[in-house]
Amino acid sequence: MPGEEKREEYALVLDFLSTGKSGSGRGEPLAQLIGEEWFTLLEAVPKPGASMNPAERVYIGKAEREKISLIKSRITYDELTEHARSELPSMISRIVKEREQHFVDVFNNAGPLNIREHSLELLPGIGKKHMDAILKARTEKKFENFKDITDRVSLMQDPVKLLTDRVIEELQGAGRFYMFTKPYVKREEGGYRGRR
Image: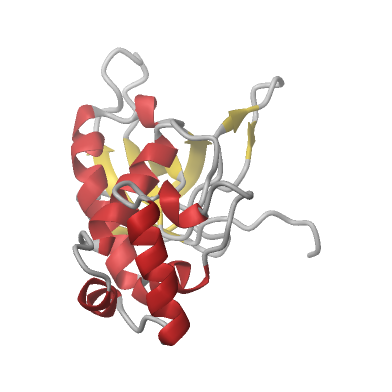
């Protein structure tokens, strides 16, 4: 339907709390997840008797779900458990590697943000020199994969690490611009806006 917000279809488990969050008093099982499409951080209630392991891929779309009963809410980086935070970089790296072409296209197609800044400069570790080298290399020939980027741009750091670091920055709410995630905005009425 036009205007309907897209939602995450699949997510990776960051943490599974079989007795819920400590201090919540409710004791219901809870899973903290990261969506594969927009890196949305979510809390979900598993189906009765369902168990999940960190790094497990679960379906969270609108059709029949095997393990997830309901998506409780979208959460912030600060609401992640310590374990979920420790899993986050490796889960983001995994998503980036699995969707390599999508992220290589970022290097191939990224444009300026304004007259002074280019969106490539939002990636940690990319300054004017690297940006110029990337733009020059992609004009000659589009990048084919992550290895192609590091081979053709001198002194380029691992693109997967750059992208992972950027996604974490965005999830922490640190920047003015968002390349890969949608900013978390809590509604006044207590609901949640944005992709879940």
